[in-house]
Amino acid sequence: MYVTPFFDVEDIHCPETDEAAKVIADIFWEESVRATFNVTGDKARILTERDREDVITSLTRHDIGFHSNTHSRHPTISEYLENSGWTDGVDKVIQEERPGIAAVRSVFGQEPSCFMRPGATFAAQAIHAGGKQGLPFVGSAVAHPRENVFWYTNTLHFTDVFGMSDQDYAATDRFEEQLFEFDDFLEDAIRKDRAWVGVFCGHPVTIRANEFGDVLNFAEGRMPPEEEWTRPTLKSAAAWDLAKENLRRLAVFLREKDGVTVEPIDRSRRRFDDRPSQVDRADILDAANRAADDGIVPVTDSLSPAETLLGFAEFVQSYARNGVVPDRVTRRSILGPTVEPPTAPGSDVVYWDGLVDAADQLLAASGAGSLPARVEAGDVDIGIGRIYVALAVAIEGIRNEAPPPNIDLPDEPRYPAIEQDLEETIPSWLTSWEIHHPNLDPTALVTHARLQTWTMAPADTG
Image 1: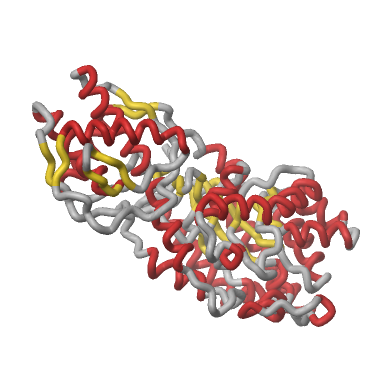
Image 2: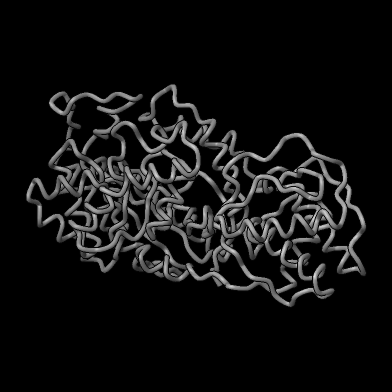
């Protein structure tokens, strides 16, 4: 099992934390443990302004991830995407975050290896925008029902990251409790045959200081001018020395832990980013069987629901045109709908000819980059989830002899069955971060997150 250690480097208020980042990077390097240090655009620029080439050199020996352009300064990513649609939201993220990516690249002389979520901000558009710029995403609010390395918004995702407590490094008893819990976490992951897990080792700022400067200055939407910023207070020299000792213990533990290989995310991402160009007929038939039996859009163990739907369409189209079913279908990478599917059924039934029309429309739409929210099946306007189930029923009929002449349409589903209540998870996630404006409206963020569950697929961790 591969394990990636992460640190987030974002403090802009306290120059002493620059040195803390350097010391931590040096400790892990001395113990032959290469970590991923996620740096904000602000921090990269400030290290240059402060002429801290020594800090930059120490960090550069490790892997460098991207941690947003401005982190907690308002508006955060969730705040500036609060009322955005899909396409304009993706464009907005690229516009806002590109300067930070450029700063990190320029200062550290390497392409950032990932996009680590800043705080508890979240937006599906941000994940996709990072993916378009070659950055897998770490630490999402959205979870795959079975896998912790998966695809979402056609972007590689890494979840299941154990969190160490920044303040506990300076208290050996609490640190040892954390280390024991981390060891249990690793053993459990090994038993589950996980291919990868992460450990968030902490923030240099709150390992060195007693408070997080972002919370002191930017909590609940506040944005004071720089001359009014409050600096965090530093731990005592003795507490800092103890924290350094325990950080070294963590590095040694990682290096010597049986059954794991420690590596930064720039290596792990390359292990899991292959995707098949074609899918066997058996995978299509298995997905169709489950959808037809349960009346759901399942998240399968091979394709995303969107890719499966287009596989269904190719399967039905081949049978309708040629009287044969294909041995393989093409995997077409596509996003979920960008608008919500209809709530009211357009009809209770769809006929075979209409279903073939719908399959043709889906395959034609695949070049547009995103699924339509609805299709026309003959004279019937049908939401995308219901057409998924109808195509599955037709494929079951083809497997058993012939497609039924007409198919009863279910009232549901509108979305894939991911076993996660995003209407609860995402608002709770956003409000858990004290930085966010208290009036942040999560409605549109939830909608886009749910629509893109059509893109959820396991990564190849074999």
